[in-house]
Amino acid sequence: MPTGLPSPRPSGLPRIPTTSTTGTGTAVPVLTGTITAVRVGRVRTVRWRDEDVLTGSFKDALDGPVALGITGLAGDEQGDVVHHGGPEKALLCYGRAHYDAWRAEGLELPEGALFENLTVEGVTESEVCLGDVWGVGEVRLQVTQSRRPCWKLSSRWGVPDLSRRVQSTGRTGWYLRVLTPGTLQAGQEMRLLERSPGTVDLAELSRVMNVDQGDIPAIERILDSPGVPARWRTTLQRRLDRRRVRMDDSGETDGSGGPSTDPEDVDRLRE
Image 1 (cartoon, rainbow, N blue to C red):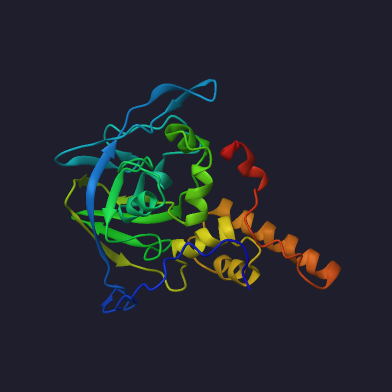
Image 2: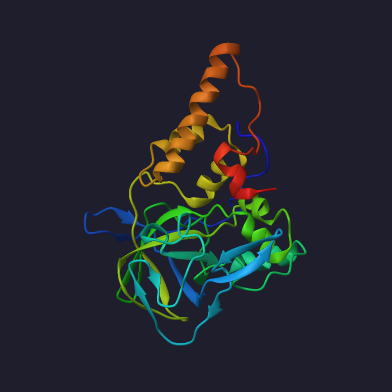
């Protein structure tokens, strides 16, 4: 059984009807959302943690249509182009409902605070799966991965544990690649067009990556799922191999199923 913090998947969600189909006849949930804001930001230098940092995290909502290319929105930039941006992370999408959840916990974050390009009403990580293809007018977008925020999010808002709280709650947001460029603007509908059989939803992915890291059956399910990013697959396989070695040595798991820090996460979180 999984251990650690509760799963970030919200409870009591209704099942989504599967009445539409792809071109191959595969049933796809009837799922839509609305873009409530489109945001872009230029790179600027700020002083965080006694060092000068380049960041594109200060993003402003724009009125009217914004041109979208393969690498993102016109006018949007990233301060760290090694870990952010590029075709696989062309857009960051965030569920508007999460801001109500943050406020309910006493954290007054304005919409756009999570550095997202698209704030979306009507869908969150529980309804979105790896590899999903979404249509927005003529634009086609594909989900590539959940977000795992770095220490800059905490520094931006002066909340030291914010990055970890984002991960542990599952309110992470998700990245999109652009399959068909075009324009985006607030008020447009997003509609799910395609979903691969056997894919994993982002709430489950976040739970296993960030909270219940020793949940071996769930790790195995995710490793069998299509669309898992190569780096994440490597991390999960390493965890699985490590757990199996411990089980072989002792005949049982060590019980450490809660959140921990992978070696590659130390610099990313910088706590």
